[in-house]
Length: 400
Ligand code: AMP
Image 1 (cartoon, rainbow, N blue to C red):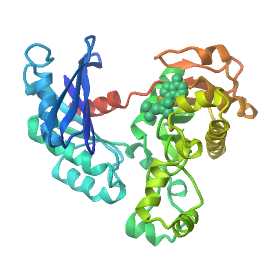
Image 2 (cartoon, rainbow, N blue to C red; image 1 turned 90 degrees about the vertical axis):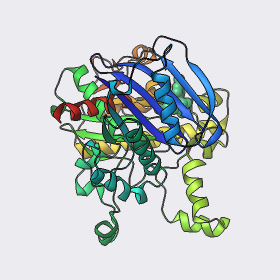
Image 3 (cartoon, rainbow, N blue to C red; image 1 turned 180 degrees about the vertical axis):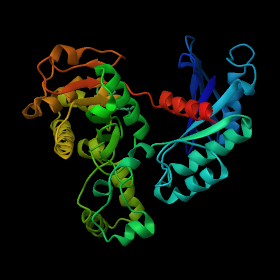
Image 4 (cartoon, rainbow, N blue to C red; image 1 turned 60 degrees about the vertical axis):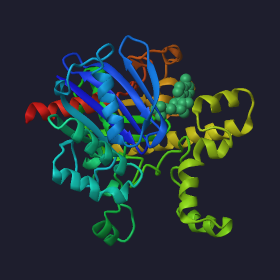
């Protein structure tokens, strides 16, 4: 069975074609700058060189059409006809309270995704564009929506409600939803398999730290708290996002700096975090290099970043009254030995002990970086959201 996974942004389509028998990626690529005369298309068959071309691509439908032409290309293609694609897994950012798991896309499902546009105005509209483009291009395939928020729908009210007038929840569904759910689910399952215990018997803290970052508390296999909220702005300090701040700052800065609401939104989402504090970069690798070269502002930004991350992990250990596994994933979590070391050094009170040699090993496999004496297993678990989306789609196809 072949499953195409697509992740659509406002001007992009990221795609991967999976062969589900061995869960291998057969081909993958990216269409960028959709809506322009010089859209960039990359296409790579596994084991071969990446191919890149520019073309006029005016919308997602044209973009997907080109992707399918590449996949079916006589010389470099990997399928002979569209019918070989059994299912398409669509990454959908926000499922609101409608979806606690992935769903085969029907008109009701599409309608529910549309109803959550208010909650994710930047993400759900392009996700819907991708869905309709794929349905047009692959009418015989099963289309499945996999939601970033679904895994967190198990959170109890005490963790998902904001202490605002309750009517805001009942009337407008203002609550915490959480994101990166597909990743947190994938890595927590991997971690449990690695330690050879059922996830349902474990208390896991999953730190997905990339450009966007969130920490999730997973108890008995379900998400019971997570650091992102109604939007992906809440929680940790991130590459360009501020994370938690006093909400009273918003009207104050609007008045003092004579900003509009959309300007302050942009400031908090795109010009804060590592970028805001350093004034230089949102990229952890660059900020770490600058710190090593003696840049004081970079040092401060990293100290703030680590402090907030540590506090959040500590809060979830308290919330769960314990922890069995702490895992790191995504760009920073998988690659920054420094961040992992610094976070864990200051969690020694909980019996967390890192093995420096293990922590410095680079690998694409799941690995343990804690010492044999550590009370908590600390793991690095490479995430793979695309594979998780493909698995979810396959499961729904198998059940239908
Ligand atoms: P992601 O959003 O998961 O792709 O993660 C992107 C982030 O991972 C960026 O801030 C990168 O700088 C960071 N990253 C990738 N490799 C490294 C590395 N070797 N050391 C520190 N940060 C890294």
